[in-house]
Length: 63
Image (cartoon, rainbow, N blue to C red; front, top):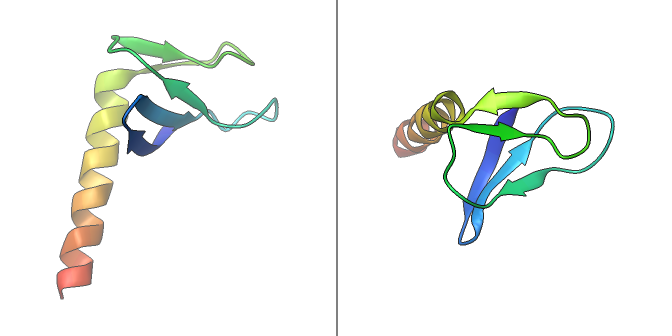
């Protein structure tokens, strides 16, 4: 499970399951659950991973 992007309405999250498209986590929560398969992910971990990946892309683009 990973965050793809931040949208005005929440985070676009990709579960990675074979049951469907990414979904939007609309409200702040401790965890998110895929509406298709039920897999859960801790939002703090997902957001941290997403922020680090975005920062890494910015640094590499600046080089």
